[in-house]
Amino acid sequence: MTQLDRLSVYHWLNAWCIKPVGGALVRQEPEYILLALMGSPLKKIMLCSSEKEIFSVEEQVMVQHSVIINNMIEDGSYNHEESKIPLDCVDSKTLKKVIDYCTHHTHHHNDNQEDLEAWDAQFLNVDSNGLYDLLMAANYLEIRNLLDLIYGTIKNMIKGKKIDEIRRIFNIKDHGFTPEEEEQNRKEYPHFY
Amino acid sequence: METKEKNDKSKSTLEILPPELIQRILLRVPVRHLARLRCVSKLWCSLISDPNFAEFHFHHSSASTNSCFFIKYSSMVHFVYFDDNDASQKEMCPPFNNEPLPNFAVLGSCRGIIVLHRHPHSFVVWNPLTGFSKRISYSHLLPSRKYHGIRLPSLHGFGYDASQDDYLLLVAWNHWERQYNLDCLSLRTNSWINLDAALSKPLGVFDRFSCGLFLNGAIHWLSFALTTYKDAILIFDMKERTFSMMSAPEQLVMISCNFSGLALLGGCLALYYQNLHSCNTDIWVMKEYKVHSSWNLYQIPCKDFQPLCLSSNGDIIGRGCSWATVTVHTESLLPLPSDVEDKKKEEGGNRPSESE
Image (cartoon, rainbow over all chains, first blue to last red; front, side, top):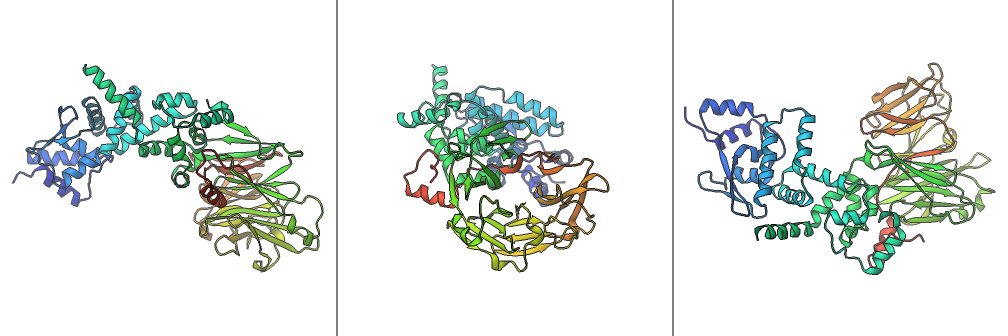
């Protein structure tokens, strides 16, 4: 029996409509069984942060969550032997967190909802800077479920807060209103401030 | 040295959160909080005030987080929010409270816009979130009708015509000689159209302070007699501007005309009434619109239950009897058709348009 490489396995599975797409979790067991039978090792890919630090991660973990990486692998532009994927707008600290998220959700997708939510809450227990870095990274890599999670968190941070607090949270130093406009707003809606 | 560089880098990330990401965050915020967020910064204000954003937000956010009960109690209005985490409410003055004798009645609500009847002879359309309001007089309709004093329309309905991006208000007054005068106001053209010719037969059993229900591009009224299931529902198609009839389920029992009506439950037309035999409230839900066989019965073991809407986990929320008017209201920042044209004439203001 010839050794099939990972890409061929994916194409084979695609034909049977088992397709990993960013954000959707695929049942992995048949794949692992298939690969174990064929003796093909779990393929890893290399991600390179803006600080030139290399992270090795299971290909299937990233392919399941990130639409961008999935597309790169699918269209064959990524060469497993040589390439690393440069992520110039994601720093090492954030990239490591993103990888943690994807890895946990791939390996624990059978966990019950409450446990997953508790893990997510703990995962997002970072300061505002960290949260925004994660948001930008998830947006760049198009990781749907992480984006939804962060949007939900930010939305809850805004709800019911006064304008001055919201400006602090988003670090908006220059609100762009003229002094007259700002004064007008404060007079008309004093309870917002 | 490295720490300082890191701080500078993170600071620059925060300051430059791109507008598209801010917009995506704002799309998830329930619309009632968006009004205040206009004051955060000029960028946020322009994002929120953009009519395309209001339209997108209206269509893509969950209806239950933007719905509330609009309650008239004496001369104030109350908004009661019933989504899962917030059981909050707020009170507001209608946009004419500094006038003497602020008497008004609620006629309907559609896409965030509320229609009030303002005594003596005008209607007020109002979006409480944007603050925009407009008064339209109907006194010119009266001399030919030989009426005196304040008369609420005996039949009314308010809905949206998507084909014209227009809102239509239908009102009918019954004449003491049993003739019906049915008029229709188009908010876009600010003109009245007489619809008497569109009625093939007199309104008859629909003429009893009936409030129309807007659904699927048409306004629906329920006959108040309900002695027979046939042709129990009158429908006005907004686009075609024609009337048609629909039957209620055959299993409808002879019922009292009190506490009967139509409601919108989870996007489906529902017909409810007091079942005098079993002392329940019967609610018939038409699971597929205009498919007669899809009427499903739900029985609530409670008298005087008037269903209003569904909560996000599928519970039916209703009310008992009281004098307050309760209307289900879906909030939005959508402008009225003429509002958009006025805004184009001005040079982009931050604040909502003043009333005319």
